[in-house]
Length: 113
Image 1: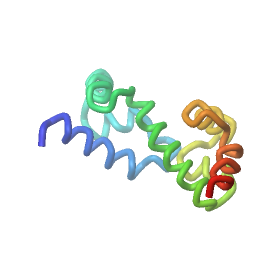
Image 2: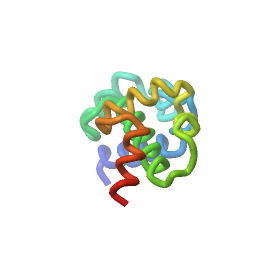
Image 3: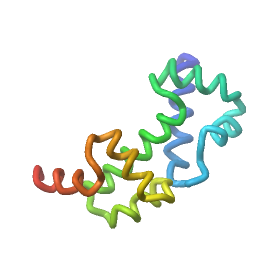
Image 4: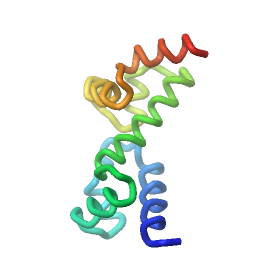
């Protein structure tokens, strides 16, 4: 496995196991992987085509979308479960990623099921 692929696998595992923690951020990733911010930024842009923060947010929002589809709990509870303490901030990011707020997303998914 190339270094780039290894990095991507390691980063994915790390984010997948910590996305639910509100205090999990790029600084934590740097500390855990023993890598500088500049290096993690450069490697993430190269391997994942987004910034490290965007990568973490994308995983969190994808997990939230899955939970919304599964109708697991209230949207504000899902926000907390995927690492967002502020439901308004979560809704803003969700809308940026999926083009609609979480409530509308839930209604749209239910209509197509």
